[in-house]
Image (cartoon, rainbow, N blue to C red):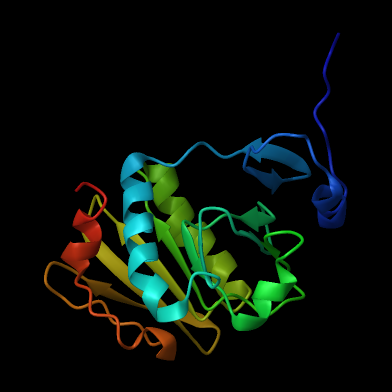
Length: 193
């Protein structure tokens, strides 16, 4: 018996689909492409940031790995390593953990760069453009290979990037994160401890 690939003519059609698995997939040119599991390093860094953000923003507003964001371009959706959502999202996400283009964007997305040029390009180029196009105010790129935490702030429709290394205190422009006292080194080491 030959199995054919499922094709979707719209994002709404994709949202109605359930294959009965917990697989995480990106919708690319109408087809589902399974996203490989995160590395232990990536999960460790995201979990550390989750623990740091939790007392500041509350458990309902910090999402780790499971939040889906509809974006423009291809693929049509992304699953950031960590996201801080808005208060209004809590009720909107009860049925499906997906932020649609018709909703306000999340406040912050964090991506931990996986090894390899393809992954680096995805986080520094493709995702940077897609997140900026839907007006996410702040995007952090945590890069274990270069040992840099980049904070990209959306100003006038374009991200301005500030890089933090070593003992530099990572500074967010988001009012909700002004009390955060983390260095780049603390964030980058957290995935391997």
